Length: 298
Image (cartoon, rainbow, N blue to C red):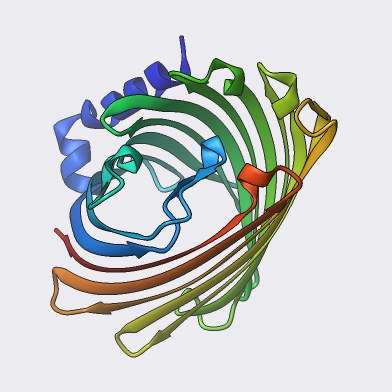
């Protein structure tokens, strides 16, 4: 039984709970987002491809999520999300992504434990591109009322439709610390990840790590977030075209602002910057993205 099947079964379990349980403790949400994006270097990082050219794109996102509290300590969460990016000129870089996830959460001895399964099905230019299945156990704890610690392990399987050499198994361990200055209205967070990927093509095997910093602040109704991430990848085997092993260093930074317009509608602005430095020419680039969006949730 693959992870996608497990995800579907868990999601079905949520929907199949007795009607009275859903009426008492179920919470469901539907949301939709439409937006406009400017990208100064249209790219597909999974293939180490970039155009070096700018383009505009329309964004669309639809989602449904449900949470059922089975008891005071046990709950099940499941959801589906679809997102699409359609460029004006570079239609060969149009993407569509289906995301399906389910998670059980159990609180015991002051610990928040979870087991999540996820499946991502990505399309590129209207064709199947990449499928990723994941399973991820986690454990977290609130210490006092100011520090929240979380650890997670994620095992992923990647399957490409037309790039079999990139098919891979990936394992990652994450540790995150949230310093709650005013709950989630004002916080600072640090995260560290260690990961290892083993691909069908040994040239693409790598070990890496990532350091992440995030900041969130709510000023009356305005919500602000900032992100900075530094990532390093050391490829374990020689890349034939280089005559040596590949080395990547990546930087990501972003800022976003969100303002509710009413009970159901929200306006958002986002800016993202990515820089990749590598001894492989095709993986060396920088990219800046700006977008504006209008969201509705019910």
